[in-house]
Image (cartoon, rainbow, N blue to C red):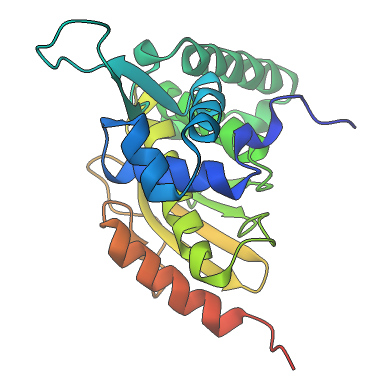
Length: 240
């Protein structure tokens, strides 16, 4: 089956991942600073930021400088659907598709055990991960999500931990965009050579499963990237 035109959510280019990573680490940054950090020409950075904004991953807003003329734009991650028409559309579409599938197959309906709002959060999360090409497998009982590590074989090894950080924050932001109790509790990169695990939980409840060596979802980028790099090295194939 052909994939939709918005599949992979604009993240197939390492330059966009670097830009998104920079925006996540310091929300509100302007085009010039982002271009300089990522080593991109300012016009290239502007085009990539437009794609990320069109995908509902970031939002640009005027920054008041107190000077005359058009104010500069600062870029931040989308944390609420009200910030982005694209994010609002994706959330509504995911809910509609989830409700349709549950109507066709009652075994897919976990609203009695999780609550309707948590189920709709999972709808949105599944759509994001599927469209990012990560092949999610959600276990609604244990509240875990198995997914592919990444699709960015062309990236340098030193950059791949940043990919883990980007995706962990995207998961948190995706869950935050849909009102509900579901939270990201941990990311376990490279549990196997070709699989990572997300551990979710309901607010006020303990995680339903534990796996050693995880990274707490609220950890800083540096800690997440350090752990991801260690895990990557453990499971990387030898290059003889």
